[in-house]
Image: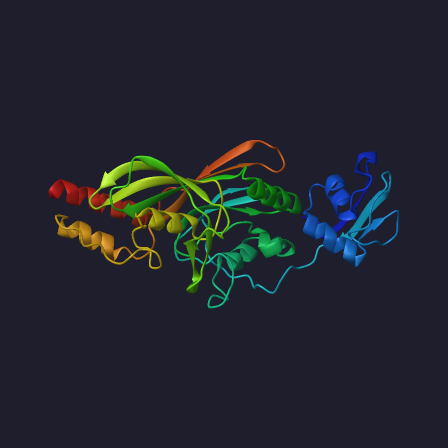
Length: 318
């Protein structure tokens, strides 16, 4: 990615009356509106050679010019942490995140995160917001993630997430015998009694999850879940709300299973699973450069595969 950007474009007559930052998005679609606003405020994006405010109205026909240096976005330090790369080119990095890896630094986890690893893998990512991270998985959720490697990709991926044109499919093992298929449409917001948790609340943001049974297992169900939205802890909260919490979920799991008639090996495997049994299996998106539809898959994590195998074996052994 070039460190210095020098571009110029003419505002279309159809943009007459628009704000400068809105017109800039139209003529420089490779950059996010937030980035363009920042350049306008710094005087690095000018209109007819003059500084202006993002709210300035355009008449149409003006010349917009960007003359800007890409600068580091933060103070996150690179760390040599292995990454499981599924795909890489100039615009995208697709990886399989292991369970236990925090996505970006926050209170209690200031280092040893995916963001630290990404900056070690590609130092140029320091010029992108959050080093190109546009979505996240919970610390103990494994699976496929995409990271932007260019400003064009960052703007495209953010837009795809906002317009829901990026799709994600998960696999989970939940407690109980879930119906063969269904949809959960329930708004999610912060739990008023515990701000670290989320909960189904009418005051929250709309959230929809679709699930489909893959197979029944002793005391549990192996399911596929696809999302229409991407709220914090969405699948975990929705499954618990439906009455089928995810195995191993320390926050929403509702304690150990005590179902009568289950083989002892199944009970031990279910109650001993050390994390939420949730894996992001498939990610589908539009490539920001070629505009082709791309689909990426991360194989189910070894610990979840082992849990499934143990439950199947306990079913056979009785």
